[in-house]
Image (cartoon, rainbow, N blue to C red):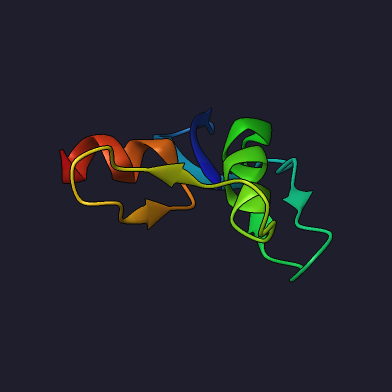
Length: 72
């Protein structure tokens, strides 16, 4: 991630990019990286086989609850 910072010199103003420290959260199963812990938590659920959400109408199963809601 970058931050744009205004820097004033003697004769003019400049804008420069500055690297911002990025906090990373890494999946323990596949090493995929996330910037937010919530996104990591949702992702790691997809690796677990025991968590499924089932449609009451057709019986189709989903690993994520939001995918079941979209299916409905």
